[in-house]
Length: 256
Length: 256
Image (cartoon, rainbow over all chains, first blue to last red; front, side, top):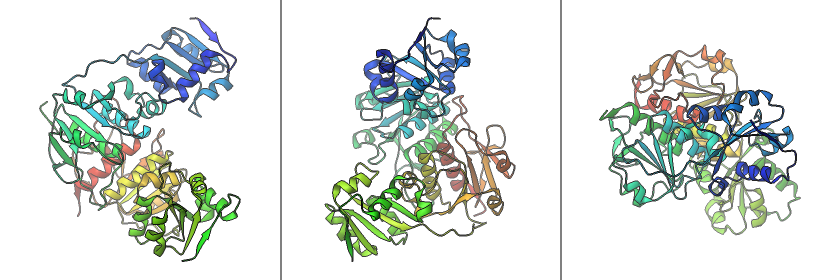
């Protein structure tokens, strides 16, 4: 495999790579995504993703053996340049660059999670991870949601990105294309999430950390779920609420 | 109320305050905790906490009216000094300094969450929030867990800190003091968490993001819960797993 050795941080290719790793939204203009560390790289490969480039720290000889066959090209960096690039203090010096998947049409019948302007990268990644674990196949992120392929979200997703069909910059019209029932959480209406079976497949609507789901989207919801909070405080992190809803809906479902 | 105006960032009191806000572990040596923003300040006051100091940006005249009666002393900062201090870009310029609660004995009968060396501040804060919402009263954080009163954890906790008895730097001996049954998640043993009632009160054991719960603590667990993950990937964020377990245990409990 052709291997390119870059030794200067002024190398244009290195500068582009640094932008891709460190600028959360740059993947949209560059049309490439950055994936770092053995776990995430393996997750992508196991789902059949083909990296454009394998990026290795020079000291990571094992990485070259392990991954070279999968990539079209390898780029070797002195350890200090890889470290400057990396977002992971404990990285063993391996990353991959993939083409950003092309936008596809929404599957109106797929189990889906709709993210309405969620802000926190950790929350978004955690919800993607829960979605994948509980058998959801598709995510619609309404415009204003944290960039799904930002490296921080990819890390928090722990591989879920490669198992899900992701649709970004969605609007209400895209949500209306769903034929599966749209479910939302509510503090004051609907059944308790643990107390009934939920339709499957379905779509769960999860909203902004402060403002919740927008009124326009709430108006589209066909059923509401309440999360019993016997501690007396009506307050849950949105990724915690999502985990409870997605789990409940996946294990106590009708329509299978 | 006496109000102190600080105008220089070299003021020793300001420098101590900045350390308290920006150094995640400094509350331990300073024996004080920083709480910022209306929501968190109100949460503390509503639980009967008395601030030592009210810290206000000069332009926040409403804050002085609203909070002055609660604090022993007010400190006014020029807006630029408050902004330099603050961790919240959208803060309206209010914070409070409280005495760090004195360590108390473990309540062996309280519904409890045990955190075994969790690293991520967002995860720890989210679990505290879930614990409070689902009626847990006590948290034991094993030595190596992210500092519970670090400002980032306090923010993610959204007020839960003021409703819970928090024990830091715990060891296995402290966990052994619990008389409530100790429950742990497992990928290969025990009942599915949604499929049975769980003893109440109880203690849930949540482990390190990468390594999970230590073998020594796992050996103390009296029952195990599995989280069904029909998506085929055995992978959940620890705060998502905690939300599912704490919720399930709070809503489908025996022994009330």
